[in-house]
Amino acid sequence: MENFDKTEFWWHKDDSTLMSLEIEEIRNKQRYLIHPEKNGKYFPMKYGHLQYRKNSGKIIHLYCALRIYPEQTFDLRVTANDISKVSKKDSDRVKLFRIDGELDKKDAFDLFSFFFYNNSDVREYFNVEAES
Image (cartoon, rainbow, N blue to C red; front, side, top):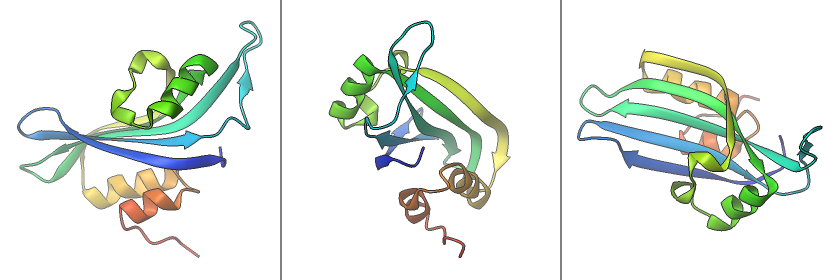
């Protein structure tokens, strides 16, 4: 999972009090998975999602997953160059963990930093110092 080209961050408004953040690492086509029965190439990319309640300043939902794109939709995803333009139907999603309930920002951002462990873009975005 180390060969990613960039990281996309997308904040969007769910309603008047709730904001969502989606993060996805964009990969190149050098590494892929082969499905034994479908005989095609599949490209996993790390994905994170959180919901932020503006009035309390708390994160109320967070999960990290792998989005696994078949080659056809992977090419569309990469050329779209915008996470907001991609449908959930374009990939299979495997949630690795999910937390529902109040988290403070630092804990949520630490979880994202651990999940996107080799990604300095995420640490810089959340202003988390890399450990030496």
